[in-house]
Figure 1: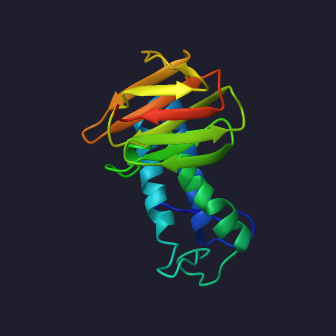
Figure 2 (figure 1 turned 120 degrees about the horizontal axis):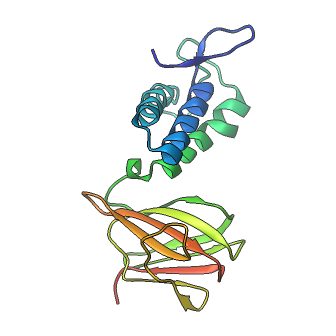
Length: 182
């Protein structure tokens, strides 16, 4: 079983600790491209997902029926979100999702042909999983250019079998509009 156990006195496999390890592996995969980390992230996230019951209760571990609020609700879900931000192709295909931002997202609205959001900072990077490639992206009052380099001001598209991944790097405007059609 691919799981992380408590290190001090309780040697039971634990969902939150396992999800934390999985998220770190996902982020190392994002950084290095080494498939071993992606595989580890997937295996350990799979185990951690079994700690959520049908009624939404997050158990400590498979043999521990109770919950620890800080582990089950304070960081468990965040680890999964960090993993999706690092490996955005794991987010559901056929849906639009903002997965990661270097700024606090204050508001977001999704519609069929337009996604709009406001961030706390003007300088920010975001990662989204989208149903289709955008036609135009506006940050503040300026059109963002499509670019081939995720480090440059603008947006970069990665085509997937269904939809794709949008990576934005912007330095102007807190309001962002992602236009899917005219």
